Image (cartoon, rainbow, N blue to C red; front, side):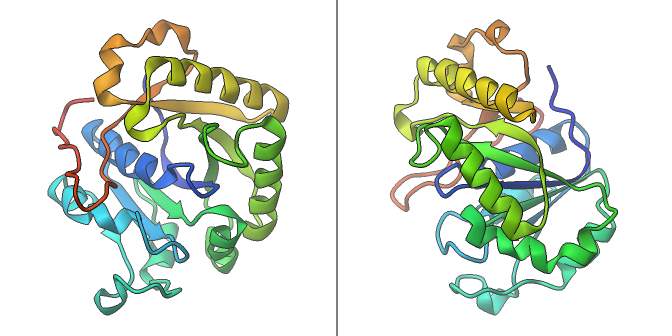
Length: 235
C-alpha cells in the first residue's frame, strides 16, 4: 500500500513521539514517489533533534527545507521565518510542517492561523505508545485535546510510530499497530500509516496491517553515531 498524502500536512504530537524523524523520512518517501516536496521546521521549542539536523541529506535529494535565518539556526530562540506563510499559500505537491512537541510547540500554528485558513491543511497526530503519556488511549486523547486547543486546529488522522529506537523489534511494531488501530477506532480518526525501521521490514509480515508502512532510516542520532544513508528511489 502506498502512502497518499498531498497538499499541506502538519505533523504534531507529544515530546518523544518521533514526529521529526517521521517528517524527514516521509519527505524522502514522497520525493522518491515523484512529488515535489517542501519541509518547514516549525520546532521553536526543542533545541535538539530538529528537522534542520538533516538539512544536507534533504538538500542532496532535492527537498526544500525552510529554516530560521542562518544566524539563529542553532539558537534556542522562537524565530519564525516569514517564508513559512508563503509556503502555506502555495503548498505544491506536498508541504510538510514539522511542529514542536506537546501543546507548547503547537502554539506556533495559532500564529499561522490566518495563513492556514482555507488551505485544506491536514494535521496528523504522531503516536509512539512506548513513550510517557502516550502509553494509553486516554493519554493520547488528552494530548490530542491539548494540542488542538493550543493550535486552534483539529487532527485529521493518526500516524503510528511505535519504536524503542535501537532496541525496536518486530513485536514492537505489531503491538504498536494494535494500539494505534484501537486509538483510531475510539477517536474516529483515520490511521494514515505506521512506521518501521527499514532494516526490520524484510522480517515483518506486512499483511497484518490495514494501512501503509513508512520505512524509517534514522537521521537524528547522537553525535557519536552516523545517520543512515538514504538511497534515492528505494523505499
